[in-house]
Image (cartoon, rainbow, N blue to C red; front, side, top):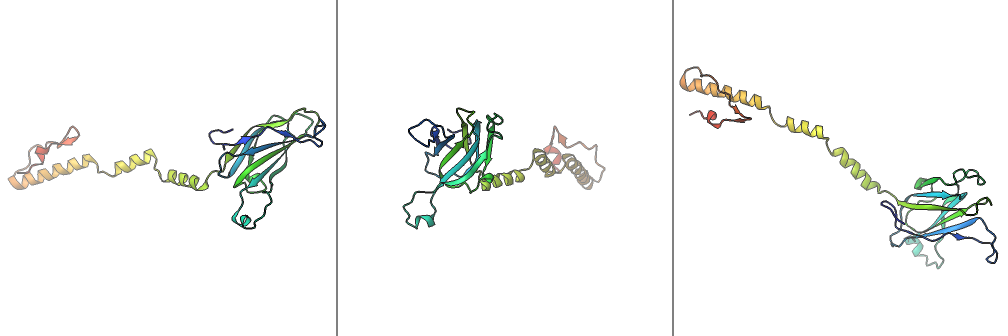
Length: 220
């Protein structure tokens, strides 16, 4: 099961726990095992699921061995570490309140830091005989968000100027064309007076259709 932001994983069918394998007495407990086809350990961010009349939920995980654990040479299998213990999903197990609600469990709620996970188990309990079947469905394991990447994205957005700010910067980088035209006209008039000794004739505006007439800039 996997979505756009979920982890690719495999869920086994719920295994009903029996006190005696030779009878059909229901213990009110079942286990869902989760494995990951990829070798990279999971850094879990949160868990989403839909309840189906499960009263209590316990979640356990096996973690990747650390370097210190590898050095011990122990032949014992990895321990199952409890992440969530007996989380109550139904306020009253004999009534259907919250029996089909959606739940989210965040990593901050877990008893251990959920990083480097190799396997998981969801242990479901329903002590009430009211419900013939119970489970949790639509389980989604969502990985932890990389805080460094998230911080870089925020900083990048802070550095990017807005469209209006960009327009303001662009417009302030160049002088006013009208002021340039006026200054050129005054300069031309001054040069004409000094060369001819006569007052300048009618000043022709240098700006022509948004540009300048090159011929008017010649003083010879």
